[in-house]
Length: 413
Ligand SMILES: Cc1ncc(COP(=O)(O)O)c(C=O)c1O
Image 1 (cartoon, rainbow, N blue to C red):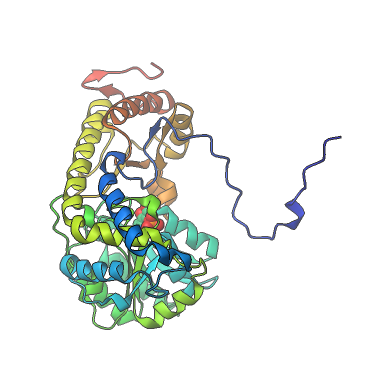
Image 2: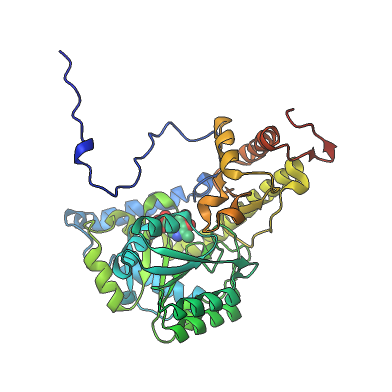
């Protein structure tokens, strides 16, 4: 007789996130997630680095973590300290850095150190879904600050801080993605970084700077990190190798004062970030990071050009967007008639995955007809075909785009 499967449902505690949906394969035209370009993973360099480091230090894998202590593999932290000084103007030593299992773990650890249910934080109105969802799950009130082409608006931030202070609320941090913002692609200029820092300092609020796209600016010119401009140690800076090398490696980092790192370390309960990944990255990045990244940027820029051309051809003036100065995303505004949550469902049924705006915003009305497209991972052919199909789906559902390539289209075609 068949045995009835054990039922766990009565054992599940309250407050779990909704159950995951079973994976049924990636969409044929996949414009979602923060994935990288498969053709740009430096496979040969990583093979050579893995071979060299395993031959030299392989026996160290017998122990949990790495030989250089719980903050992570020292050559990798030394590489980072040097790179952050050179590129972002930050003065930090390897000892100010904690290697983590992707910057998602950095988000969890900093949230774990600073946040309790009912707290308030300030965040860009459009922001990374992973950050927004974490705050929601923690029961934290996220106050969204609108962005313009230079990132978080300082006038709106100033008003929000003043109004919170009137209500005796001190936000736990101001979370910002200042260097190629996700999803809008803006880069905050240095003057605005200074203003942001001044406001944060005046109100006694730390800044949580998430800088994971900073290597992907087309001309390689980035403003100094906010961390570099502060003097009082009130900026927590996080970054990642996901966007510059490969997200599957799961290696990110936190730069923060020991008062924060010591607490984050106490919460880091994974037995150490993968040692092999850290060792391979250090071995590869030392000699090759500065040649790999410009190549990656050129490839990404070419894919963005393909996406922009496809949108112009298929959507015409119905798709509005700014040409981002870097990154892997395009943030697109469609006509007001389009509800991108509904478009997402219809597109999925046609084999196209997009990120609907409301999942990336604290303002459901503003983001209703917006969407985010990742151009890094689909091939140029998939970008062209996928956007043509998306235009068809959108036209069937919402009657727009009405024209393509200056040829009028009928809804329901
Ligand atoms: C702004 C931002 N922060 C953090 C992450 C997490 O990256 P990872 O955990 O791969 O380092 C992402 C991923 O897309 C992101 O866009």
